[in-house]
Image 1 (cartoon, rainbow, N blue to C red):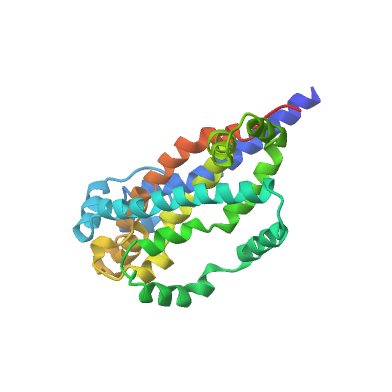
Image 2: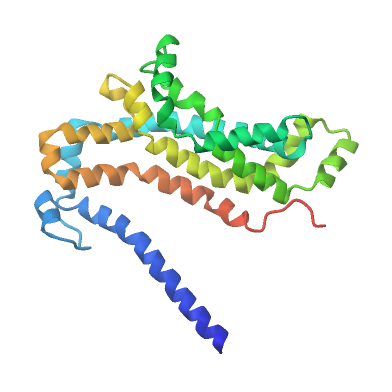
Length: 276
């Protein structure tokens, strides 16, 4: 009886937390259908009647679908690079025994603690000398080096990958490259998918570096830069509903990505290679 009561209150608490998490999204969707005056009048979850006006006002200034396309051009390749190169680096650091392995790992941990904003000036100068200003390459190529993803995947590999599985593949004559792509990658898939969601969201929402690199024209702006530039428009600044409409449009790909990868996150709880 005591366990049932405890489970009831646990579920009740989890439902409460879920409601708290959902309310901001619900408010965003509702406010996207309300006028600025209605939003300033107070909180409500009842949709308004200004959705079309907000939509038209936003697209009178920018085509957010172009911004969405530009963000996808950056976010998808960057996420793929992050996932693949972080996985192969984490696998090497976890499985292979070589001198300096721990030093490399400690350096990766140190780089995790350094804010990326500290290197912005040097990064901009490098991009300028390489002729990459106002291109998407500086937003994509650095994704190859992702210390946080490497750190997580290394710990993930150590927890799920059995050395006996690799030894069996080597005895069968499989090369190291084949072992990684045919055996290790599928086993690491839940962990990679988990980190890929974070990488995609981070690249999708990236604002400071695109603002620094992308100078003109506005049609090349990524979605966060395009939405932020709406604040400079007087009519947009007076209409809070249009801002909410733009933000609501911007989160659609993130929701789709999460729905696609969520099953891998759930499977990572019980993922493993072989039973001991």
